[in-house]
Length: 352
Image 1 (cartoon, rainbow, N blue to C red):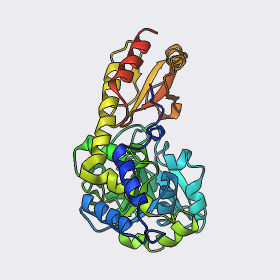
Image 2: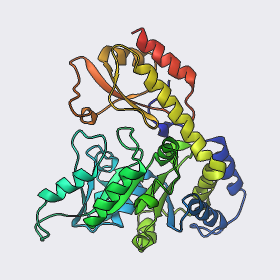
Image 3: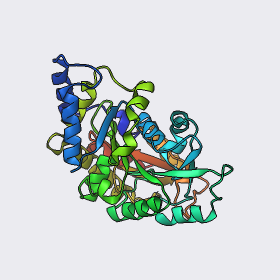
C-alpha cells in the first residue's frame, strides 16, 4: 500500500526505453545534441507556442533558478502558506536568488486567489529602500492541498499579478496531473492564462529525474544558461534529460500516466469519504488525498505496512479542526498504483 509520494515510484518502461536508446549514441555534450533539440521542440509543440526551454535534474533547482530569474536579491516572492518553495526547499530560492524571500499571502485557504494579492498590496508599505518589493507570484499546479487551478482562476491571478508588476511562476511538479484532471490543453493551463514561467515536472509522473523550466516570456530567460551552469545543473550528457521528456511526452504518455494516478486517488477519496470516522480535508482533484481520521486508525494502517505521511495541521481548511485523537494524513497515488492496494487500505481502515 504505497501512498507515501509519487516521487517514490520509478520510471515508466517507455521512458526507460528512450533512455536506453539515447545511451547507445555518441553525441556532443551539455545539451548540444539532437535529442535535446527534439525535446525542446516537442515541449513547444505540446504547449502550442515558442518558449525558451531548459532542463535540470530536480524540482528544487527548477523552481529556485526560475525564481532567481524573476527577482533581485532585495525583492520578494508572494506564495501560498503551504508552498513547497516556502516550507520544503530549505531556503533554496533565497540562496539562488541571492536573498529574495518568500511571503505567504494566504491563511487556511486551499488556493491563492486574486483577492489575496489585492489584500496584500492594500496593506503593503510604500516602494522605498526600507520596504520589501514583491516582483513574483508563485503557485503550484496541482497545489499543496491537491487542488487544481482552473484556466479562469489562473487568468484572474495573472491579471492582478501583472497589474502589480509581478511575474507569475508555476511550480508544475504535478502539472501533468492538473492537465489530466482539467481536461483542457497544456496551453490553456499555462501561457494562455497568463503564466510567465512554468517548471514542468516529470519526475513525479513517470521519469527518473527530469524537470523543464519553460519561459513563455522569453525575455525572462536572458541569463538562465549562466544560472544553470553556475548551479551545477548543466548536465554533461544532456541527452539523458531529453530522452526522458521525449518518451514521457510521446503519444500523450504523460497524460496516460497522470490519469491513472488521478483515477486511483479519486477512488481512494470516494471510499474514504464513506467511512464513518473519516472525513476529507479537501476535495481530491488530482492525485493527492488529504484526510482526517482517528489516530488509532492511522497506527493500525501503518502497522499493516501502509505507506503515507501525517500532514501539517496548517493545511486544514478554514473552520476545520482536529479532534484530540485525530490526525491529518496525506495519501499520494502514482502511475503504478493499483486498485488492490486501494481496496486493502480501505478494508483495514474500515475494520480498525
